[in-house]
Image (cartoon, rainbow, N blue to C red; front, side):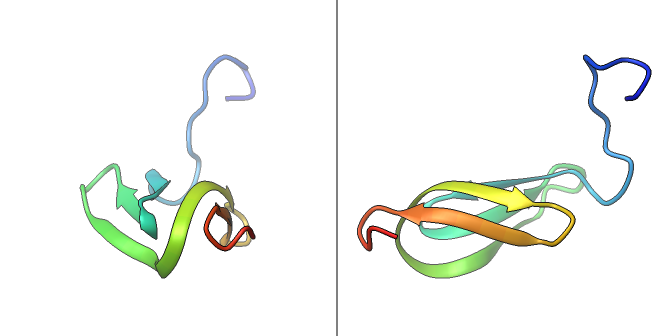
Length: 66
């Protein structure tokens, strides 16, 4: 919110949460509680980051050391 820097509100799209589950990366929709795997067959995905505007996802895999 440009008027209040202590608040954050999505202005487009649907609110969702990305999380790593070691062997895959999933997205859960927070407004209609749907969960889908968006990256499958990871060896040991741990940390991840997302660039919302481009849809790119970056993650660390501790087994593959990448």
